[in-house]
Length: 227
Image (cartoon, rainbow, N blue to C red; front, side):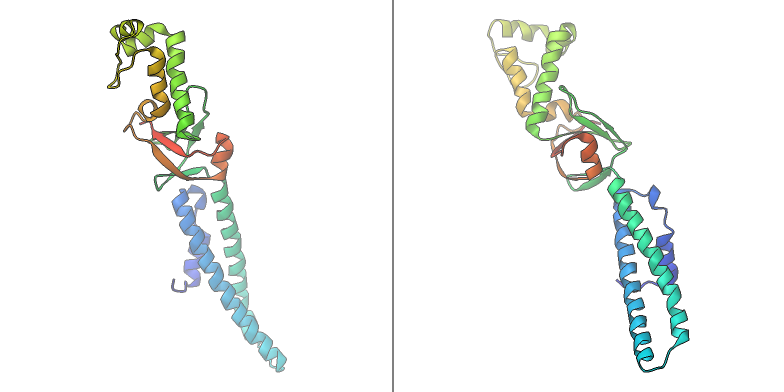
């Protein structure tokens, strides 16, 4: 990276990082780190020159005065770098299939549903793993069957329930089974059919910010796009 002039460095210092998304924050952090390294090198070179002249009883007051603005700018860059680092640490974000997503809102998981994260235009279900999500999907349908039988009949179909009662193969989907229990168990291995209503796909969670892990109460490894 070519050296930056002082005006370019000042622009980085003045950046409104509190309004930035995580990808832009990471970029700004790298730029500030480069500016910090550049200024440290310049100040060190001036220190060496000043020390050599002082050793030879040739103090250079002009050089000492020239060094002062660089030292002040270095202090500002260091403060800005630390502030951006802190902002990155505070920001809730997640990486799903290689895409960095800033999280606006989090809804807690429960027995029937994984946690949901909202990024404004998209909602995602996230969970510890596919097995845990599968258990939640099964529980969701089980509770509907027990607590809201009218809705369950509407969703599954009366004819399907009659066939299951007779021990015959039936099902509301492409997979046919012979009982309600067998059908509920299907959800254990395919939680994406319940939670990935947008595209039916299970996604990998590559990474997750510490603050998001703290709010979720677990480290997610799978995600399902809801809308």
